[in-house]
Image 1 (tube, rainbow over the protein chains, first blue to last red):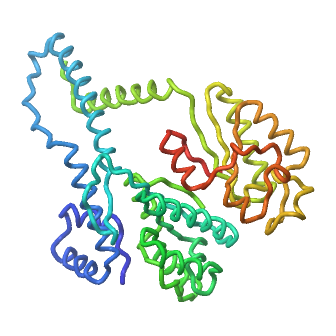
Image 2 (image 1 turned 90 degrees about the vertical axis):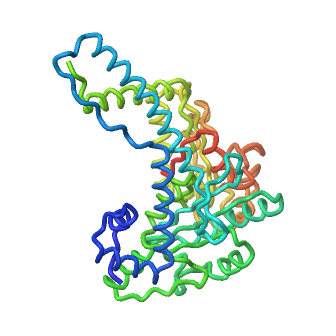
Image 3 (image 1 turned 135 degrees about the vertical axis):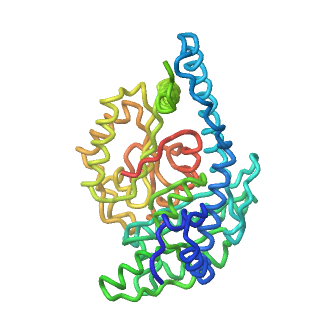
Length: 238
Length: 158
């Protein structure tokens, strides 16, 4: 499948693609649930942002010669007021973004209620040191267990790309058993591998990456990290 | 004189920036450094970063914590303890390191260590680590880092 850029995805969501390209992309989406999910989340984000920015009023016709000092002063006051209001709206837009949550399948789009106390942590893995990975999985396991025992809502997503992909590679990971057990025990834990990294390994080194069966894939690991951060997940670098 | 849209936007941006600046200047910067690399080179760079940060903003204007997790715990591991612990190949709390750590602690930097890391590597923090008390041991690094970020600490992974 050819690479679909995030620019194209944005254009699709904005309805700015020519019909032929749109049809092609929609077809690609049908065959790639992960991509479809990204588009879905993108839509949700855009809807939230748009909701926070009401449509601009059309500009009033200019009245050049009448402009007096008084009018200029009024304009400045208006600008300050608009600035203050926009700041308030920006803050609310940011809050709205922070409250986007996913359902158990990672597909839901319902905004969380303000009192939602779900802790969401994204763990970003970019190194191939298996001792580090193992230490980290200790922490992940401890966290999941503690939250489960206390009945507190939690989601953890481990995203790996670049060298970090080693954690999720069948032939390289020393943590396969651990990943299997953790995934079996906790449905609020996901492991995500970067497709771009896999394709780069294939093209540049002729390696067909085999992932552990528990790994999900995403087009660009880094984009997924950014998205999670925008959604308000706590970021931790492995 | 007519205020154009461009000017209006510029004015708007300025008011917003000023607001942010004022809001930020009113309280000390809160930082948490997350260290999980075990090499003395990396850790020395972290200590230098911390020193430079404090020198530039002054200890009163900042609240700094360092969370040592995984291999990062070797920053405070005494060389004499290395044979007693499991699965670690560095013990970086040499006299030179301890001097730097003392200086940072004197300026209010708090060094915290991960409980799971202590268990995994069979470290007795009272015996094997330099100047660590029970209050410095965190139950879980991830929840601790999440909690600190919720409380306004900026997360730094040097």
